[in-house]
Length: 120
Image 1 (tube, one colour):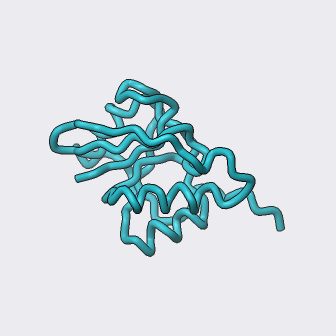
Image 2: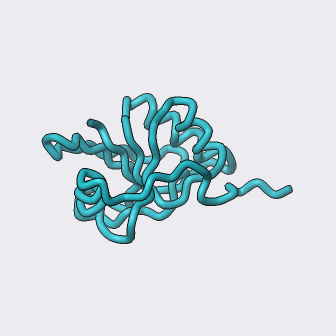
């Protein structure tokens, strides 16, 4: 299974980035082998639509699960449409969160955890 996780660094020991759309990196981990690849988040520099663009990037990578902390409403809609479940990361490193996910210890998120950056 390919699991994407928002990360502040490029290793499994890196801290999980609490942001999704503006996370520095995404680490895509194969849950069977723990092999991983790092993707620079091209959406970081965008003035708007970062979450949607980041979500599409991960869908293009064929990820099956996302682990992150704060996912806005637009990104959440993209993941729902793609039938990719989202799990809430805990503070700590990438590897710990992957292990917790594999143990069934992470909470599934079904609604946006923040309202995005749209001002009404």
